[in-house]
Image 1 (cartoon, helix red, strand yellow):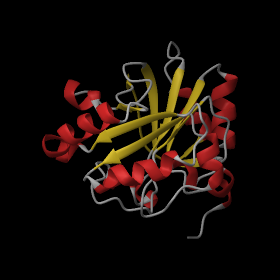
Image 2: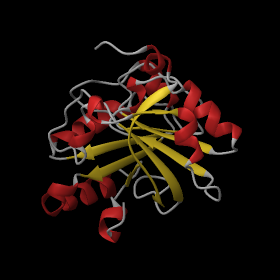
Image 3: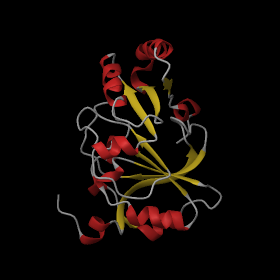
Image 4: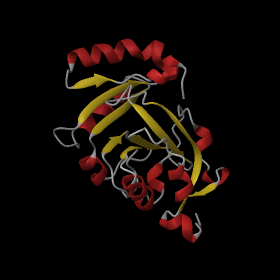
Length: 207
């Protein structure tokens, strides 16, 4: 992958979309936030609901100044998601957001080198490309997508690598929720270190 100089250092980023909504998942579910979704991901989860984000070349390279200028003034929390944000250098973007007194939240698979300044680090590991050791140790929240029963075993293997105060979440995959939800609920009742994460924004029909 050949990158231009501005992209390689994070002065521009492949912006797929940005919007004001509520955080739908995990610990901050229900919290108003501004979302910045970046293009680019090579992990290839078959159940991914934003496959259009995978090819970064389909999304316009946008200067950091323009991205930050569009952040809603009265929103404190900014969620950087994707795609896989850590494919790109997050230093300039997060520094600019912090200069506007925003709290920076990251949603990542953790498979790439960490860059950026983060107030909240949500790690969602994928079997196709496992997180780095640094990602495990930095995670404030571990969120495992549960597509089948074997994913519960994967969740436990990931939980062994995070710090003791990391919050643990199991999230039923949306397309399989009718099948897998009861298994997740039963598992959490038997293993109370875990909590359930639901994609509440989909139930609410909001972005």
